[in-house]
Length: 151
Image (cartoon, rainbow, N blue to C red; front, side):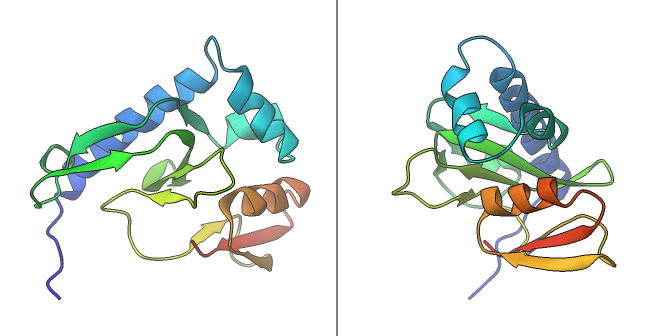
């Protein structure tokens, strides 16, 4: 199977813009539902803000080409909590976590196919399979754990 070509600079530009808009949306007006969702999952508001979480209120279609992905057509960004995977101020990947139990996390086209590593890699490693669970483990073990999330 042939790999899809990706213009990484273009992808990162669009992904960062989406992450910033989503973050501003979560911390703007009419955001009670996603903030309650995060709180009930065990994430404090301070930690959610620190992790730069956002909210995509409505599903959106986006052309692959606009995101630097050489592929015909469009992809659908579902509604949910936006998790930008950032390491040393560099956006590595972008995910949407559904607020409905029936759906799984959405990995944006162009994301690298690798686990998410949060925290110093030389700390005790905690492995999980869910982004929210991984964020909770990181919040519970600040500075003492490295969380590896396989999505």
